[in-house]
Each structure stands twice: as structure tokens, then as C-alpha cells.
Length: 72
Length: 397
Image (cartoon, rainbow over the protein chains, first blue to last red):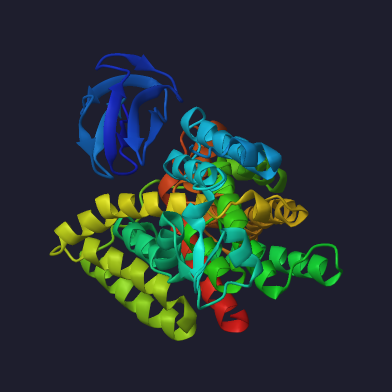
């Protein structure tokens, strides 16, 4: 089954993680909130599927390109 | 017996009206969180200078043995022999008239700016330049209204009003101080107000000039990685090329690039932290109260002030529109389509304009993450407005 990796689009801090491994998500569902430049930006799932892995937790700082979640 | 200020205060409508305006600015800052770091000190500056003596004395000047209230100093045409005599006039004189605070604020801005998005995607520099058309557009209208005798604007006033379209406070102050100091309070407050109103003013213009499909254009979030060497070379080359092109932009561009070099050099972290941190905060306080203290009711409450606010809004709206239109034109010739909304970030209100684009972009297409793409034109806009300032000062000053 194809995997989709959600990456951090820019440096920032994870404020909240809305899903956990095993949850099913639909395209457009918010996976987590990334704070960058004093803005809270929702990161959404690009596909329908199941969350295979979540690689961040609330409070983590991420760099652009860091893996956030794997959806399959 | 102590003489109070009540009788004088209520015998001239200018005093209470301006105190109310000061209170409104503070209300907007505190309750609506609109540019609070600026509107709160500006608001208090307005109140201080519109309480009759000793309040008015805060902006007084001294010519020989005569103490000139600020309005008399302005009406006398800013006599050079006059010396600042009050707390506010001293801050204003040595900080703004001497052109020290705006360039130092640019130093702090430089120390907080990441040129990465511009270096990774240099064509966004064009969008930042394109948005400056609004500055010239509003300047021409202001000059035409002045020439037609409808408002009392000469070329200096017209240029100072046009630069409001760049949505950059320190640059607006820098230009107005040089070309039309008598309208400094109005242009500065207009510039900061419109920066605070970016999320309200820009979206309808963007929607008007784009289709839903265009607003949904997806841009890959990942810009190419920019090396440290590139980040160091950019401010150095930027300083040399821009100042050779427009020498009068040197105080702003030189400070901006120095601040950035402190940040990216990797060996001057302490200096960069100071420039972009507490030093910047101190300057912001001084700038805010000094600008507010410019707004004596006797100078501010005139029909021309309304004209400045109206034309400033035209400048800002036109800059937004030109940015979007230029992005559309680039899409006609470019293979890689850009989301035309990022053109609106070509005004230099950093990072407010980028945030507007990001918010609208995600609403139209939840997968889109336009923040970094919008930062390119946004930062280029800061440079573009400083260059426009240099052009005006060279041609008119």
C-alpha cells in the first residue's frame, strides 16, 4: 500500500497533534498544528488513509523537511 | 495658587478631539491587538502633546530666548536656529530629524530577517519591486490633486504620501522627514494603521483580481536549501549593488544589510540578538512616542490630513493590486505557475502580508502552504520600498 509522508513545510513548533497511530483520516483532515512566525498553521492529510506513524509530539521543534507523519 | 490646564483645554476643540483620537489608538492597540507595540506608545504620545502646557511644552522648541510651541515652530518653517526644548521634541529632533532611529530600526529588522526565501527563488524579487508601482501611482494622484489646487500638496508631500503604499513605517518616516516634515505625524500614523489593517484591506483586492482556481494553485512547500555562504554573500552584494544603483538609499539599506550580516555570519550572534531584541524595543518606544507627539491638533486637524489618509489607502491598495497583477503576468510567461496571491505580499508589511496569503491559501486549498513563498516578495518589498525612498530623496530632496 502506498505511503504518504507529511513533512514540515518550514521551521516551527508543534502546538498540538490531533491524531495517533492507527487512526483513520480523510483527505484534508488536520493532523497537527505547526506554529511558525507567530501563526498557528494546520497541517492536513493529503490523502484518505490510516495513520501509520506519528513522529512528533506537542512542544517539538521541527525543521523544514522533517517528517511529521506517515499515512498509508 | 497652581494654574491648571482645564480652561485652556476646553477652550480649543483641538485638544479634546486629539485626546479622544489618542485614546482610540490605544484602544485599538490593546483591545483589538492592532500593532499594539506601536499604537500604544503613539496613542500616549498624541495625548501628551495635546494636553495644554506643560503637555504642549513637551514638543516645544527654543529660538533665542523665545519658547515656541510646536505649532509655531512648524508654521515658522522649522527654523534651523531653533533648538528642541521639551522631552518629546528632543527625542524627535535627535532621533528622527537627525535620521538616526529609522535606520537603526532597519538594523534590527535586518537581524530578524531570513533572506533564504528570496535567495531560493530570486524571481520573487520582481514581485516585491512590482508592488512598488502603487507608491508611484498614489504619488502621481497626490501631486495632481495638489497641482489642481484641491489639496495643499507639493511634490514632497506627494512622494511622502505615495510611500505609505510600501506599508513600511520607518521608511515612510524617513522620506517624510526629508521631504515634507509638516505632515510626518499623519503619514506615519497612516502607514502604521494600514499595516495593522492588512488582513482587512488585502483579501477583497486579491479576490477581485484572481479566480478561485488561480487561488488554489498548489506550490510545493519545500524551497531549495540555501547554503550559509549564499546567506552571507547576499547582504554583502545587496549592499554594494543597491547603494551603487540608488545612493540615497544607503542609510536604510546599509543598516538593513548590516543587521542581516550580523545574524548570518555565525560569529556575531550576541550583536544580532541585541540589534533585533532589546535595542529594537527601545527604539520602538522612542519612535512611537515621538511620532505620536507630532500630532498636535493644531497641525493635524486639517482637511489635508484626511486627504493624506485617503491617498495613503489608495497607495496601499494599488500596491497590493500591482503585486497580484504582476504575479498573473509572470504566470503567462513562466512554465512553473506561482499562486498569484503571493504577489500581494510584495508590500513590505512583514510578516502580516505573508500571513494573509497563507491564511487565504489554506482556506482555498488546505494542502497549500504559501507562507515561505510569500516571504520572498514580502522581504523584497522591504528592499523595494527603501529603494523607492532613495529614488524620491535623490530626485526631490
